Image (cartoon, rainbow, N blue to C red; front, top):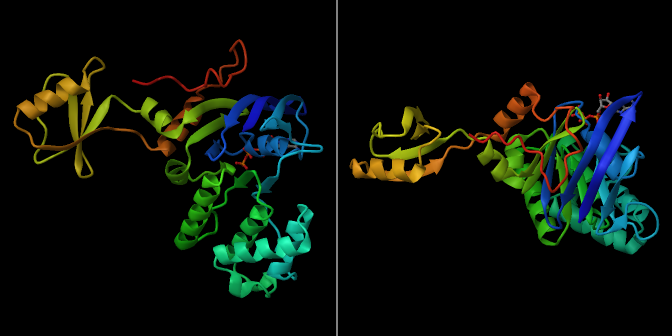
Length: 317
Ligand code: ATP
């Protein structure tokens, strides 16, 4: 759906987005990750046509992002602001009309969104009467009005309490099932693990990770398994170490060891095993490791990473 190809942007001769290419499918929640200053906002601003790229293209379902026939794109930026003295419903109707809805459709959609976010009782109040988290929900309603085909959200969970986080998650899931393409930029790695199908990570403008979240985690895992059993697993052939890990034992294997052979040896020893699962690192650990080691920043690459050659680190052990 969203197709980004070789986007590049420089400021003052400094490349801040370097040949970034990726796809986001319809009905996908896609994460855009990267440390502060990596170039995420610059990338989003090029996708939303706020700034012009020096090179590269962005299309959505084959259509350009500007001009007649452009897709409906909504962007919730990280720096947000509403007219404090305007009414809540009035604000949403205004945004709906800006997006081309007629007044009655805008009002109908705005009321439905306020109900979805549990804000219907606040429709006639001024924005300034709402708490920060409630204003954040109004901002989300403003992004969602007009039924965007591409929804770009920068840190949408910030400022929301756990219940409202759940409300937003439900809204996002419903929208994705309706076919909305969601691009989510966040530093909350647990949310990416829970909510996102695939992710792109950039660092200093370079693509450094790209792929399915589960696959990225698996690739970065050590050759180890978490074993739940009624006793400490035995040190069978191929095992280099066994350490307690939560309610399981983390069993590290030699590079050559076959997991099924190790499992069979443990079962043969009489151990009653409830679970034997690959140990995958949290995304946060991968993020820190990739940034600290400068993975993917090799300037000597012969060409830009392409979507056919996802630029994962490839250091699965
Ligand atoms: P954060 O997570 O902190 O929001 P980011 O990944 O969104 O960071 P950007 O805001 O895209 O990062 O900035 C990337 C780099 O581009 C930074 O070094 C920033 O200083 C630089 N930059 C962004 N906009 C401009 C501008 N208008 N002029 C000059 N440099 C800019």
